[in-house]
Length: 274
Length: 274
Image (tube, rainbow over all chains, first blue to last red):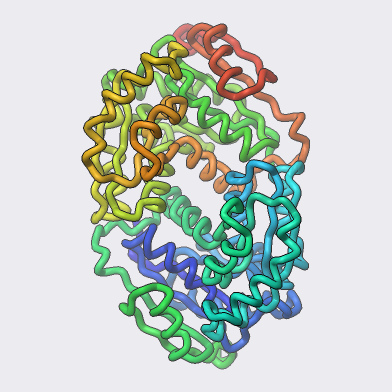
């Protein structure tokens, strides 16, 4: 049992899809979130840079005394999960294993596709993770570099988004997949558009939602769950390196509530001043 | 990474529903299973007896050098999980937390029912577990003492089963639930009959299937997963205190395969001779 918060980090607002699930599945828990919107997207950046940025975000939240860290970003998980795990002594959870696991569980025809940023797809980490668990499953990977900017600019349900999603996903339609991993935590905001293109027979796997189930598993296993039964005491603190106004607008809209604070942080100078 | 098997224990054949999921989700893993059909059902027995029997089963599998233990039985989990965890030094996983977690994740109207044996339902463990995670969720509990004997006698899809299931579940129909936890690992064999009575709007939670996801999570977290990529090397060994023929018939039918061995064991004398 621990009253400390769970920390979430993401390249921007995408990790809010994970937070939304955490609010539903773990309503007793406090959540501290840091989104690095000023340096978003992480997808096209070299691995070393993503590792450095992820480490900076981790250091920021560690100072807030969190009990567990969720790397709520596929690009950061692919680049930095193992490194961050070695450096800190609280449990650290990424989004790639949970998404892979859920896809294997749901797929019946053993043909799974994964979409993500260039960084995630080029790392080939989903394919490797799934193949490690079941070598007979076919994995089709595709990067969708236009999706994150749509979400970060709060244009995720307009006609432009609809057109971009349809054009981007077209090549997947001939692949006979029955399961599609949304391998970027920004993508669940595009779920209605993606489902519409893929059709009702393809199951979409929200890697973030699956990650929260694993957070819950580990909270129980390590007896770290908050058990006050007092949801009202749960505290939601959001930090962003970008515009607090834009972050707040997206968060309020996506989470359907406004009982949170948003604070702007200057990650580079904060870390630099240590 | 570990080539050792995962151990599963159950009061009888019910845990095979968990094994079936493990074969799908974790095809690289070897599985050793012990079903105590000679002393089944556990449901009506006093807690102390269930703890003793569960400990005897645990000792049997520990001698086979397993890397993880799954208590694939709700009655045994309710009575003995904490005690077994304290006594052994490998990870031990029960089925109640995973089932509760999945129900919270799926329920939209926050009205969840759980069905199980008398032992599980009288322990009130599902209700407590769910309320600990979210106090606002309503939990309706009902014991179904006639279900396990139907399954253990291989009569789980005949007309008697259909009638028993319909009569037993009738009181639940007026409770406006949207999620029903199958709080006994025997019950998924009755899934078509249960779903038919409850209607398509009620999501059935197979606590065993959810448990396998958690097994997978912990295998990854503790780096215990088998990574040989050689499914064919996976070994399935079944032990029963009851009739190997009956066990084998049910296992072959339920698992849809026969690449396993079934061996009769005399648990009392084995343990007694130590």
